[in-house]
Length: 106
Image (tube, rainbow, N blue to C red; front, side):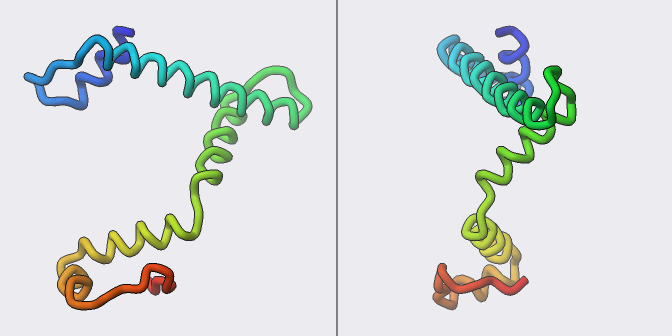
C-alpha cells in the first residue's frame, strides 16, 4: 500500500493529506485493475497458442480495453469540447446552438 500512497501523494499538493480509507480503496482498485488486465492478457496469450504472458499480450489487452470504451459518439463530444475551449471557437460556441447529434468537421 505504501507504493500506491506514494503515487497518490505525488499528484497532490505538499500539504494535502490522504485518508487511510482512501489509500485502502485505491489499493483495492489497483489490484482489481491488475487482475483484470492480466486476465485479458491471458486470453490474448491463449488465443495465440501460448501459455506464458508476454509484454505484447499486456499491451494488446490495453488496446482491447481502450477500443471497448472508444466510440464515435465519444470522439464527437471530445472534438466539440476541444473546439469550444479554443478562444475563437468559444465565442462562436456561446452564440450558436449546436445540435449534439450533428457531425463535427475538424
